[in-house]
Amino acid sequence: MNTTKEKDLRATFSNLNLNPKLLSVLTKNQWLEPTPIQRQAIPLVLQGRDILGIAQTGTGKTLAFGLPIVHFLLDSAGSALILVPTRELACQVADTMQLIAQPFRMESCLLIGGTSLNMQRQNLRKGPRIVIATPGRLLDHLQQNSISLGKVKYLVLDEADRMLDMGFKPQIEKILNNVPIERQTMLLSATMPAEIRNITRKYMRSPETIEVAPAGTAADMVEQSLYIVQREEKKTVLAALLDKSFGLVLVFVRTKHMARQLTKTLTKTHPVAEIHSNRSQSQRQTALDGFRSGKYRILIATDIAARGIDVKDIELVINYDLPDEAESYIHRIGRTGRAGRTGRAISIAAPDQGKLVYDIERLLKQSITVVKHSEADCLQFEGAEKAAKKPSPKPSPKPSPKPKQSRKRNYGSHGGK
Image (cartoon, rainbow, N blue to C red; front, side, top):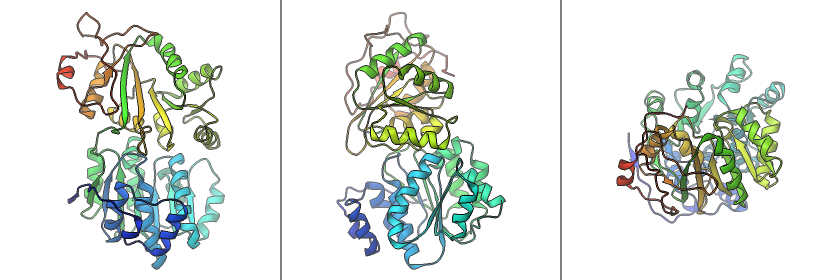
């Protein structure tokens, strides 16, 4: 497998060999300078290479695969299939693809759950050149023979790690077995678990690896900190944090029950919305649109529902509940600190969650600064020394690893599940 290292190049879309017709679309939409992943991926895709792109959400991945797809389809037959893990992300990808394809009257079709199957069948009869779909809904159409994948020449697996996390591996393999072997495949992922490597070996042809941010690293512009408090004090700490913040705040919880509970409590004092699997598609979209526009300053979300959230101006991410898996922490905090702006990520841990924090820090390859909150005692993880851990100094926007601090910290033997 070849590897392309990120190069520090000043480039514009005009020297990436894209169809000139696409350049006018980019200019019209104020896309003037390619992001690192676009700068690296587009030339390789135009050469016909399979690519494995490792990049966080918000790095411009959609245009990285979308522009070459439209470039090819302008002058050749065939179609493109873009698979994504969630409805919200599918809608966002579809919006971007429509912006670059619609000027050429290139039809696209969105296949997601929560919307009419009959309407989707009608759209499929029009012969769309680009299909954006979630795995489950695409399989529904395959089983009902309302779609054929025999003409797919370009296949995209976007946020493939999250699709696997959500249990879509069987569906993905069925879909991959229904698309032609002679195709070009683009797989995008924020992390590189073993299952992703297995898919690349089995279903891709010598893919070129593009790594914009090393797998398992957090956004450089995110200031991370940690409170260790008793569980019964978490709501008090959260309320104080929200009172002292002024921008958009994304709060992550583990369960839909907790999302409902917090939303009900916070609605009394803040403009807040919730997004989780028990909400309908229209309810999710309304919450997301309201959050993006500023109607709701706070959005309470579970991991699965939040995967498609792509909002540029999130000031603060709060992990009210730590995630069950360390890699989910990377996805969560990557929602802030975008487009050259600094962001903050604050986690609230209980004393028995030392192992979870240790796993996160090991993946980050750095310590998370422990701070004291004025509304709660600053505790230590179970199994540590009797003296409470002193709060660390105020973290910098680009925290550096502190190996000595990590070695001294005793995380105890308890996980957080």
